[in-house]
Amino acid sequence: MKQERIYLDNNATTMVAPEARDAMLPFLGEKYGNPSSLHAFGGEIRHHLAEAHDHVYDLIDALDQDDVVINSCATEGNNTVLQGVYHTVVRNNAKNHIITSNVEHPSVLNTCKFLETLGVQVTYLPVNKEGIVTAEQVANAIIDRTALVSIMWANNETGAVFPVEAIAQAAKARGVLFHTDATQVIGKLPVSVRDRSIDFLTLSGHKFHAPKGVGALFVKAGVRLPPLLFGGEQMGGLRGGTHDVHNMIGLGMAALLAKKGITDEQTRIRALRDKLESTVLREISDTGVNGGTQHRTPNTANIWFKGVEGEAVLWDLNEHGIAASTGSACASGNEKASYVLLALGIGPEIAHSSIRFSLSRYTTEAEIDTALETIRTVIERLRNISFTYKKG
Ligand SMILES: *Cc1c(COP(=O)(O)O)cnc(C)c1O
Image (cartoon, rainbow, N blue to C red; front, side, top):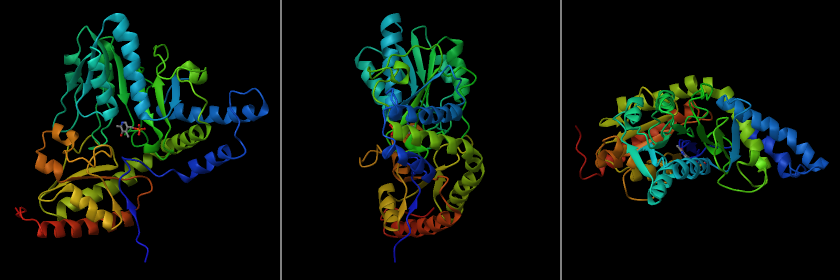
């Protein structure tokens, strides 16, 4: 009998929505023109691209005069902003200070590390037990030399949602540019750049059912940012390179679906996540949730199971066809405990025993029920063979 597979690792990547795939197919077939060409092969592409682009504007509530640069991924977006601000603000205005948090994605943290080697001073604000930094912390860290504040909207490991609007206001009040990595919040909670306090926002298609290899960067109208990739006039000169037509079409369709799906995310998916979490906590002793539960993306549960190794749990779950994660996909495979969980003040033992379950709009209640049964079996088995685990 073929085993049913249950995918609960949607913060790492998601299935391409069938509607997005269908929308893309003509552009991998007969519609292969270059939209920059003047002939009909190019012309027939352009209005499809414009429509897809509009869906991305809609998704984040951007204005027509803003730039929404379609690029390859959130890693590219984060690099474009951080390196771009270095070249414009840091080098020209002698403002050489950047503020971020200590739980950002490696694409922010490692770019900051690189900028430090170029003489930029970076403040990595520590998160609290809930897994967030407050607007007050950010306000207190701003100095005259601060060029940029870069704070994620939601964390990939804990789902913690940062008070981004308040943080953006705090930066704006001091005339400091503000960037947010919104990758984990897109499609999960409403996102709007309409209040004009956010200068840059990055997102990634493959985290909300678009294909891999496509993302977007919002740049507020009037804000200067040099391209990371110099080239032709594509994307208003903000990113060279022939348009990635099929991926842009996929991103557009995924954006349309994400905007429509927000209510389902907030009700049905949240309820499934809550069922998974509360059942584990009720029925399996010595378990708990990492981070706060109040301000969280609706699809994420990060749970510790005392006395077991997270990696061992993952392997056992995998044997039963269930996919989850011990942290960010980028961090798994090395022995270190998750830097995000450690930053919450969680001890290494608990951090090592933690599993992230992340749901999507394709997750069903039957899958959650099956997963719950399997989790119970797996934890019981591992605790029974553990030398160190003692109940209580
Ligand atoms: C996945 C992720 C990224 C990187 O996205 P890519 O498109 O794969 O580069 C950046 N930030 C966060 C918060 C993420 O979860």
